Amino acid sequence: MYVFIQGLSKLSMSPYRFSGSKPETSIRLATNNCPYNSACDGCSSRHISLCNVLDTDELKSFSKISTDFHKNAKQVICSEDEDAEYIYNIRSGSVRISKMLSDGRRQITGFLFAGDFFGLSCKDKYSYTAEAITNVEICRFPRTKIIESFREFPALGERVFDMTRTELDSTHDQMLLLGRKNAKEKLCTFLLTMWEKSGRLNEGNGDEVDIPMSRSDIADFLGLTVETISRQFTNLHKLGLIDLDGAHKVFLKDTDALSALAENG
Amino acid sequence: MYVFIQGLSKLSMSPYRFSGSKPETSIRLATNNCPYNSACDGCSSRHISLCNVLDTDELKSFSKISTDFHKNAKQVICSEDEDAEYIYNIRSGSVRISKMLSDGRRQITGFLFAGDFFGLSCKDKYSYTAEAITNVEICRFPRTKIIESFREFPALGERVFDMTRTELDSTHDQMLLLGRKNAKEKLCTFLLTMWEKSGRLNEGNGDEVDIPMSRSDIADFLGLTVETISRQFTNLHKLGLIDLDGAHKVFLKDTDALSALAENG
DNA sequence: GGAGAAATTTGACCCCTGTCAAGTATCTAT
DNA sequence: ATAGATACTTGACAGGGGTCAAATTTCTCC
Image (cartoon, rainbow over all chains, first blue to last red; front, side):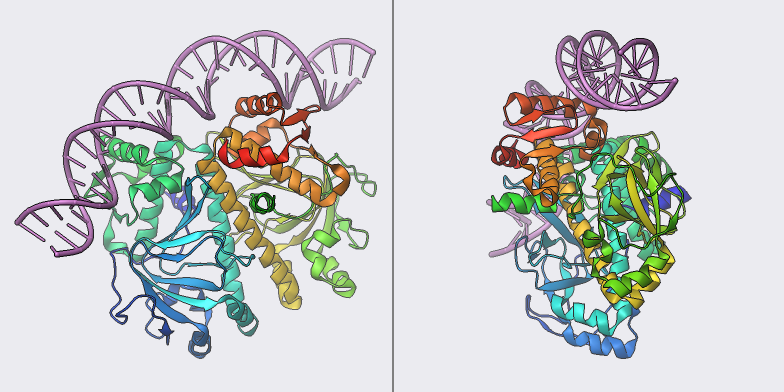
C-alpha cells in the first residue's frame, strides 16, 4: 500500500488538495470577470495555497497585489501566446491546462484544483491555455509584483519554488505514463490519482471519486481517444473493479487490484 | 522560420548549450569517482551553468561546496530511490535521465548537456536515474548546502528557479509530443531539437548534428521502439531529408521540410 | 588487426488503439 | 416537462507501430 501511495503522489497533477468538484457558484460575486480586491481572510484554500507560508500581517500586505475573480465552467482563463501578465491561484473548482498542435490535436498537461497555481512562466507569453472545467474562484497577481514580493517574503519564493519542483516531478511521471503505459494502465493510474487527491480532503468519502472533467479531457490528458477511454471504463466495470454513477462519479471497488493494473495492465 | 525556432526552444531538453558530444576524457583526472575540490576557474561550462550569475569572489566562496568528478560512458551517476544528497551540474558530456516501470519499460525524461543540472528534488530520494551517455565531467553540491547558499546568493536561487521553470516548460512540450505526435513527427522534432542545441555552440557546424545517444535511448525518449526509430531514420533518408554518417552523425538536408513534418507528419 | 559483443537495420506479421458511424444517455434552457 | 444539443457508449473495421526474428554493421578489447 505504501508503494501505491508513493506512486500516486508522483502523477502529473499538483499534489495539493482540492475541495471536491461539485460546481460551485460564488455567493460573493454576482458577475463574472469583475475583479475586486480580496482581503484573503475568508479564503477557503488559504491553508493549501502558495500563500500559506505568510502570517496574518504578511498576508494582509500581500493581498494588496491580489485580485479575485470568478469564471464559469468552460470559460478560458488564459491562452497560449497571450502576454503572461498574471500568476493565477485556484481557490475552488477545477482547471485544465492544455497545449495544441496546429491541426487541433490537444494535449492536456495537467488538471489543477484548489490550492494550485499556474502562469509563472519564464517567457513573456503563456505557453499553454487554462480553462475552467467547473465554475472556479481564482485570485491572480501581476507577475512582476509577485516576483518582487519574493524578495519581501523569501518564504513565499521558496514555497513557490517547492511547488514548481513538485510539479516538475509530476510531469516526469506523466511522461512515463504517456510514453510507456497502455490504455488500461493509463486509466487505472488516472483513477487512482483522482482517488488519492479527493481522499486528502474528504476523508470520509471512502472509495467514491468525483471526476469533474469530461471523457474527452481524460483522453487528451492520457494521450488516448474518447472511445478508448469509454471502452476502458466499461472494461473496468465488467471486471468488477469500479462502479459508475453517471459519467462523473466512480466508485473504486478494489483499489489494490487497480493499483496492480496501473503498472501491469 | 521564426515559428520553427520558437517551437524548438520548447522541447523537453534544457535549453542551455552543450559543447558537442565527442566522448571527452578528463586530462586533469586520472581516475574515476575520485572527487577533489574544484577552483571553478578553468571551468569550460561556467558561462552557461547555474553559477554564471556569481562574480569571481562569489564563485570562489561558492566553489568550496563544489566537488568535481568524472564518469565514463554508461556509468550511473545517481539512481531512482537513492538518497538525494547532491545536486549535479554537467560540465561536459551528455547525460540521460530516466524512470522505469517494474517490468523494465523505461522512459527517458530528458537528455542533459554541459550547463544543465539535475537532482534538485523536493523529496529526499531521487525520483529518476541519471546515467552518462558519453564520458562526462560533473561537479556536485550537497543539497543542504546549495539551498543554504541560495540565501547567501539570492541571484543563484533565482537562476536555479528560472532554469527549473524553463525545464518545466520543456516537459510540457514533451508531453504534447508523447501524447499526440506520431512516429515521424516525433523523430523530426527530436532531430530539430538536437540541431538547434548544437547550433547554439557550434555556429559553423552547418546542418550536421551529432547524436551521442543510442537508437534505444531515442526510442525510450520518444515513447517508441528501437525498430520504429530505425525505420523512421531510413524513411527520412529515403525522402532525401537527411543523410547519415554512421548512427551518430546526421546531416539535415532540409530543415524547413523537417520542421513542417514535425507537426504534420 | 581480428574475434566476439553490441548496436542497428530490415522483414514478416499482428494487435492495440484510432477512425468512422450510429445509437443512447445526459445536460441545458426554456 | 420537453426539445435540442452535447456527451457518452458501442460496434465494425483498419492501420500505425509493436513484436519476433534474422541479417548486417559498428564497436570493444585483446
